[in-house]
Length: 277
Ligand SMILES: NC(=O)c1ccc[n+]([C@@H]2O[C@H](COP(=O)([O-])OP(=O)(O)OC[C@H]3O[C@@H](n4cnc5c(N)ncnc54)[C@H](OP(=O)(O)O)[C@@H]3O)[C@@H](O)[C@H]2O)c1
Image (cartoon, rainbow, N blue to C red; front, top):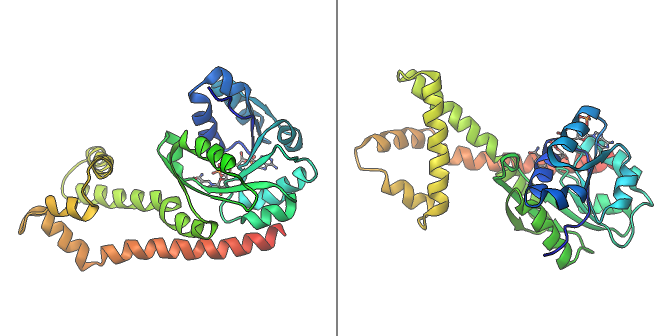
């Protein structure tokens, strides 16, 4: 059995909470004792202590010194201040894993000196253990560091390693993607209601349809296009629905949403780089 590394989460909000849950789920007694989370909110600290048996506090530098892995899990706007807390505190043992959207490895290294840095982009389904995370290694991060990052994010879903310049695309696809699916479900529910179903019934059916289709996509060896073709009889009901989607450029619209979010990620990254310099 490998010993869980000592992990400090600086910022204990939604994403840190999901990761702490994943990390401690396998071995609560061992895991909890090896996790320390900092957050300004006393009630949040108490909640995490009670739920996961972890150590909490408000001193970022103290938690970081204790840890082997320091997870930067504050909002990007606060990251500059947190990196300031860490100046001169990190040594050779430390791996820094940032989940802050849009903040480059270079910007983090500029504040922390010769640190081993990994930058990751998880998504909200991590909150229910069904996340999709992509991560990129900084120049000093080792294969063992990449394996540690993989272990952390695999505790809440699937993990992919990419080059850092792909993280904007990851943000546009899987980072922002859950919201596209939520919007799709909103439309399906509205359509169900317009066709005579109650709100509750339409919601139940729409959510299960998306969850079931996702499971089928994952478990089938067919491509999404082939699965679509298999359920579409010429002249049938599904064909009528798909024709309507095609007439409104559904495919191009969704593709364009990923592109727009990717481009926004690039812009935000530049703005954030300016703000934490
Ligand atoms: N949620 C997602 O799906 C998602 C996906 C990908 C990446 N991310 C990234 O994950 C990071 C955290 O996002 P989140 O959704 O978990 O945000 P969040 O819920 O707001 O969590 C951030 C936490 O950090 C605390 N905090 C503020 N200043 C601090 C400081 N100086 N030291 C320590 N903690 C401090 C905040 O406390 P207060 O509330 O009191 O300020 C808050 O509890 C962000 O950088 C985001 O870009 C999130």
